[in-house]
Length: 212
Ligand SMILES: [Mg+2]
Image (cartoon, rainbow, N blue to C red; front, top):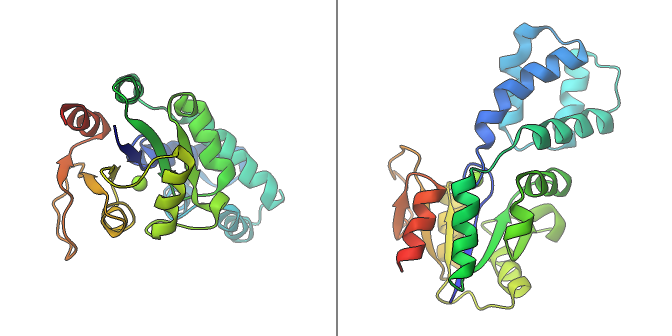
């Protein structure tokens, strides 16, 4: 059976939903006016890493070191993140059917590792490739090749599931993978070829793979 690669954020876990409550907690924990929480949440919405906290630190005159603020955020995300049990079960079922399952995610090593561990995904998947760890980001073909190599499987015949049209879907097509787009209510308006299959969420994507 082939490879089944999955994106992490807003595919296997809902990152977006975490940000508003964590921004509120951040403001409360660091003496930032609660009115600033939506703006802080918007800041988190971008690619988050320590550099984001350097910006928040200077903007709000926070006394803590950037490394402490970043560590606070990693812990807060790890405490809040959750992967639905049916998704965890579905991934296990894929493996039981002989698929090799891996996560391919863009992000910082410490936070993506914390999410994989807190959700239990690290116990289920065969491999997880994090962009910062390998120094390559999706849609670079090399990160998909790295995932395949780590699994000891060819990319040929494999599938990639993700929510991002560029990094996930075009990235997958760039190495000959077939793709499932997590549409989450959106329609495909991109010039690039659409995914071979569209699903509302990760569970529907897994269910599709199990029918193949
Ligand atoms: Mg994503």
